[in-house]
Length: 213
Image (cartoon, rainbow, N blue to C red):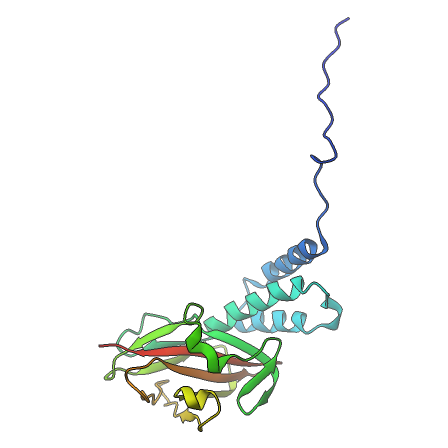
């Protein structure tokens, strides 16, 4: 009688390793985010925000929070972004975003340190917007996002470090900002403090404006 050969069973090292706590939480967070992606932007924001602030989702690894915060920032960048009058189809959506439940003198006291004053030291992670002196910036807000606060500020390096008052920019009814370069030879930080109807957190959007010829 012939006997069929039997494949060697997998060794312990070949068996699928169980997911770590962080990997499992990351998978759970990504699955939750997936369920929100077909909803309107504001609904996505609020669902993710509520899940993030739910005490039952807290984990010592922070892996669940990390995925939710990344998604919350992606959505927030679509809700508010900048363009210029000269190039209205070019969307500047790579703002650095800080979120918090409390503001103190325009500093967002939240999950991560508010590094607005040091933005010019990390230009690789922030949106640098070229702007001609004759051009204007425009703030674009998603039609479904009803802001209860939307204020824009700028200033030179000393002002950003607290040495001088910041300039609050006038936001025109058509969305244009009354922005002026403090020093045309230097990059300049521009930021917005925003909160929408139903939001549980303030958001601080940070961009860098660069004079363009």
